[in-house]
Length: 114
Length: 110
Image 1: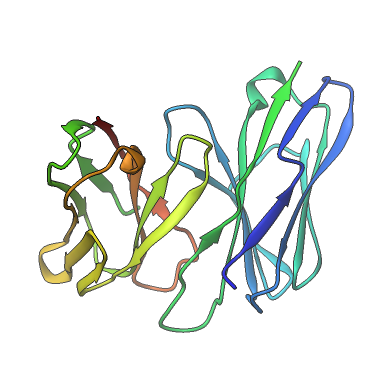
Image 2: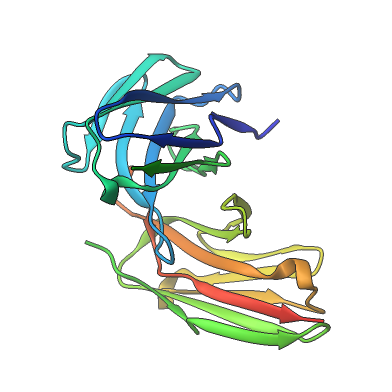
């Protein structure tokens, strides 16, 4: 099973709302990732969790707050977002073992900030 | 950081045609992946191919690591092949960051 699931599929939120995106994998992967993708652009890395610890934060604004409750789950908490944060948010996971680090992506959450 | 360039940026084919997509990278890599992003946004893994040649049905890929490029071949294209094809690499040296090229947008017309 090479499936990464994400909920919700679509999310519309106002600039004063607080919401969360969720990601889950059951492949035994020990690294999980959040990416942001704007229209007609490639995905851009936001955060990496390795063995449930934050290992990379690509200078993401604090209105995005990641959380890794356990090795299968990854959340992205959203607060006081701006309209320019509207994008497709992709979660990915990988084995994080030496030699092979193939990443598998979820279907994404399409976020609209009004 | 490592640079990834894909060509061509856009490609329009008739159904049944063959095509070759190219990915050049500026430094040694220990991971190279090809993805197909469908119109709904899903990134589908096509190949994990840091070196060598692999085939999967009508698709095949070759990476020549010493010359820092990879090629994706699509034969007998179908309308369902439409979408954006991304090449993404990890630098050698252990970085967890997957660096994407800008993609090739493929349109297959019936």
